Length: 422
Length: 112
Image (cartoon, rainbow over all chains, first blue to last red; front, side, top):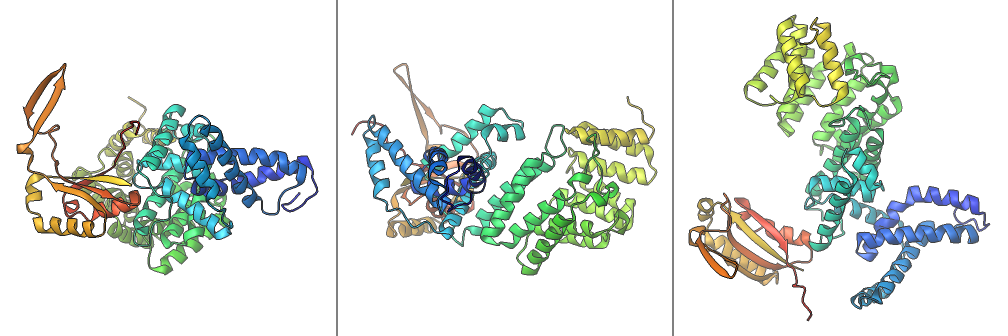
């Protein structure tokens, strides 16, 4: 049964509703939040609207415009709910009347897309705590349950629920408006949205702790969000971020062995890379670079694209990668970028050149607690045949790393150097 | 909606800021209808903290909390929403050297 098909068939109606729930529920919610002015009321209304759809669509067939039907049903359910509450609390009656008087607007697709974008900007509002922005975005924009978000971030469900409740309370009490920022504020506010999307992706791609190398569903959600923002705003840096995520995610199958051990980029079986995703990523990077209005995400994506274009590790265009790191360092100076550049320099000019840069960073007192700085130093020393220095640096890296796959990798390197444990 | 913008900064740095800048901004906020009331404050060395415990009033010299940044003044404003309040707060001159805390006003929960 397709929308508009009036022949009732309960089983097919249920399947259609499931499909519509997946594609439409977040858009319907976004519009209901605007109409009702309240997250919790809108969520309840969304739930009630779908419950009504299950009953009515099975009987009468799926309406011509299911999205408009759901918004309208949700709005009436909310007015009903407020009227019921008004029996106990007279102040609610005003609210119900106001909602009824607000003429129901013609629900145009453009308005729905605006609502969707409004929801993203509210959830990623910089006046909310960063971890609350992430939680709220996954809950409201992606439709994940609180339990799913809690388990993805290895947090107790009540803690995560509390975080979401507090964020919604701040939106209400501080009166954070349900709007897309004005053009003048857009760049800063978009940064915050992109940061949330990238955080979600990274938590899925390289979890800060725990056993799994990828928690694929979070990465998928982040890519979906990235597509949404690109589709709605067409901003070059949003394209750059989407490209970066697609290019990294394309290597997922090659990134770890079946037993969960980490495989370095240079050792990966490149035939396992997802070519379609890489092509899409490269296309996006090129479009973002051509705009001339790109930032750090686009540059990182460009670096990733250069790797993706090499048929084998030995064919990597390292001078190009170093040049991109030089640009990145100018846009966002940071010791972590310097470290990554050092690795590229070592590939272009040899390990000695890389080691000099890393030692310079460490001597400034920066990244001394960052396991990858010591792992890079260890690798340069190993390649230079300075075994004892390599062992010491690997041990330091091992002491600082929290994830299991990285520990295994470092232990393997240590045993290759003939070091058999303390 | 009403918000209070609390202006914090290091007192020595704040003294560098010309009063005329702050006065001009307050005047522009008043003209646009956003300013309900605003007030700069004397330094923390003039502060007195009062507490009542078990019916006894204790009075001590100094501010409530000893921090690097001190409360230097406040603006009580009317703004459409938090975004407008942020935009107003970002143009308060001391925002460039100190920081502005925005707090929504709360109506006391009493029967009218």
